[in-house]
Image (cartoon, rainbow, N blue to C red; front, side, top):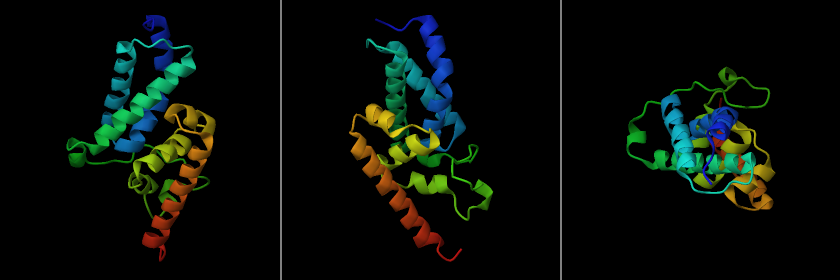
Length: 164
């Protein structure tokens, strides 16, 4: 059963911003993020899956967005893109201007399995339970990857910015 036009309009309005932030977490470029988000919606329209609820549609869109973003990050054309910082990072009680480093660049250097968890949890404000469903891994695995990702970020910051 294909998604109806009415349902598509609803899920587009409901999830577009979230998908954009996820893609931006990988690309660091607004235009590329929009392209990736649109590709996710095209995949939804072309999908023949039966979705039980809008939540299942959301997880499908997030998974497609992550996969598209990873493919983009690995592509040759991505290496030529000039990066910008239009979105503010969700960093507790610290404004971006106050940091001696670009946290988004540090996150971008993490291995994919940690970067994905960090982006979904901090940039997109997803709960561990939801990340577990989207990535199809256990909640303890999400927690462990989140912990390891944070530790890697901390190590990078301490190693590169300890004198600042």
